[in-house]
Image 1 (cartoon, rainbow, N blue to C red):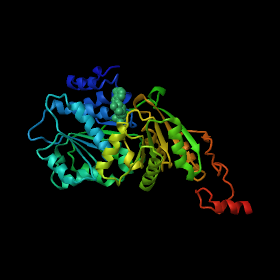
Image 2: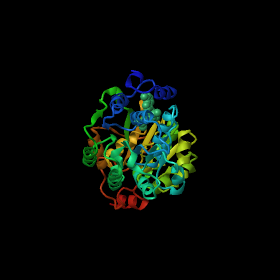
Image 3: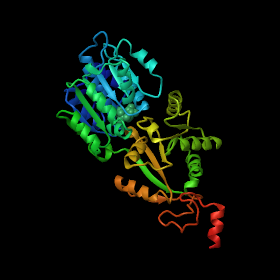
Image 4: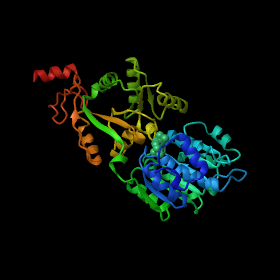
Length: 408
Ligand code: AMP
């Protein structure tokens, strides 16, 4: 089905044809017509499903139908959990809106950078704001933004907004919005807190869930490799080199691990950079741009930083450290296999993380065979841990440990 029967304006159809998307994704086909009617929408949608366009187009069409008043008044607010997602979503809205007869001002605001340039850019008003919640409230407190004219509110990745601890900020923001508005609510999962917010926020919403037909499932081959925790970097290096992966996103648990592993890979002449919340915004933007342009082969990232990244044709995601939750697992592997591409998601499992991995598997209704890679067979067999040698749990036995074991 083409985009034309969805009820979109000629300007937006022109913007879409410039992007050369062959047809709406299922979430777009389901959400756009009802959102255009002004209804509230409650959508269950993963990253990679095409959800950004599913809310961006109706939002733009509403603004198009009510041309810009001078001075510009903020009418559409999109809340997102991370800076990177703010940039991605904001740029998508800008590019789709570029064909409209009345030029719209789309402002992207997020924390971690100086507030002053953002305040300067907001002078003279804005039509659309894409924001992370904390910085939005700061800007309101500085009188740089007024939310009282918002007619459309989008919550993107609502589950992640909660995961990242934005519940309080959301409550404050909602209190500043006018009661009469359209709400478009997108989330990959619906834990109780998200359900409660949806219930509070939405008025008679149309529920949109993409049917789980095989063709709508992302094409991601999920694999697990058992390896001793202390040999994961070597294994990673080996896999990157042996498989000639063009680009790899590696997930780790801490910023320290991200720095250390990227450093080790660079020493092995693999072009790698860390990506975590404590890097400057400039550095994060640079790393992301280099990765997207394939100037960088490996990015070693923490969950917070990597959430919502949209990297076209990313063939491999590696869980160097397992994610804390099944939800994070879903988000991580969703970075590959996007929009109809195929991808591989590899998890490293050691004797210490096996129980946690099994839990993730169970929640995901998965059952993966634990593979071994020649030359990297674990000394401590997953599923049958050898008796303690006195070594530290989770670490490869030291020479001393082996001598002690041999003496027993
Ligand atoms: P999202 O779920 O918004 O993060 O979208 C993920 C990716 O899907 C982006 O790279 C979009 O460019 C792409 N995309 C969005 N809509 C379509 C479509 N109708 N056909 C093909 N790709 C799309």
